[in-house]
Length: 403
Image (tube, rainbow, N blue to C red; front, side):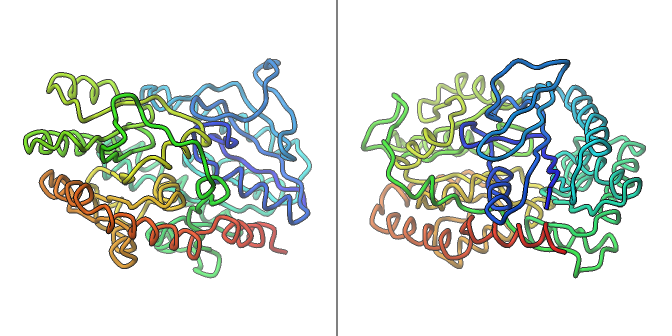
């Protein structure tokens, strides 16, 4: 089959963004299908194409994937309004591709929700099978966070969500809450597959050159957060925990925040104002370098803002990277990941907005290294048995290309 695959934020492993779509495309190719990836330019990502854009577009083949990349530079540090404009621009350019390319199945993945627009047009105007993957529930999440308050905009997003779900022949949800959210919109449960994010064991479970930022010594307990520094991530909770650790005199515990985003400057300013030497900020790194950092780390931080919609409605890439690398995970909100961590004994699940409990967990980790090592082994066991990317990508390939 020829699969036309839309993912605005696509990246190969050479970038610092998630590589779910790259892995899924590779699985489709291994199963004998042809994949054309349609994407935009993503600051944290690398498509692998290097030639100059021609009239706002460039094409090429990278690792067997045919790529169509639009010159639409996106960054998590952009204002909300600018991001919306780029989302809409990508959607409208994608409609043209959906009408002109030769393909058997159109697949589209969020975010953003506008990713479903080319699939809707392909389904109703070209009668092409449409498979839609939902990574976050929109507009539920931005509404719950208070990011979008305009009732007209929320209504329009709700209509687009309904149209995307009901136009799709099949859907993929990345977490239990997402699957439930899709079904609640009136979709037949038999049309929805639960395929969570996976663990790239071929990257993170292999030997890499370990490294640490200069401010972190070999004997420090190093807890790392790797990902977007945005409103949804609630990283002020990390600063609060760092304050608590500082007051306790635990200078042997360092928290390293790797990544970028619209909240990074304010977080850095706050840490500097408070003279917190136990918080280290680092620019984004590619997967190979990230694997080296994880090889030297002691704990992975899975942090989100305390928004109930997040509890069961997200499937964060970083969590799966952590456990693939054999890192115990400290999670600071309730939900399916907290339940998994507690059941598997692969880390710590602490209450949200509780700096004391957060600091307690890191102190326990620093003072009980043998138990921490066992948690890491448990984490990698969960990664290999429950979330192996190769197994999940095969399931994905069969669902997308289903006759």
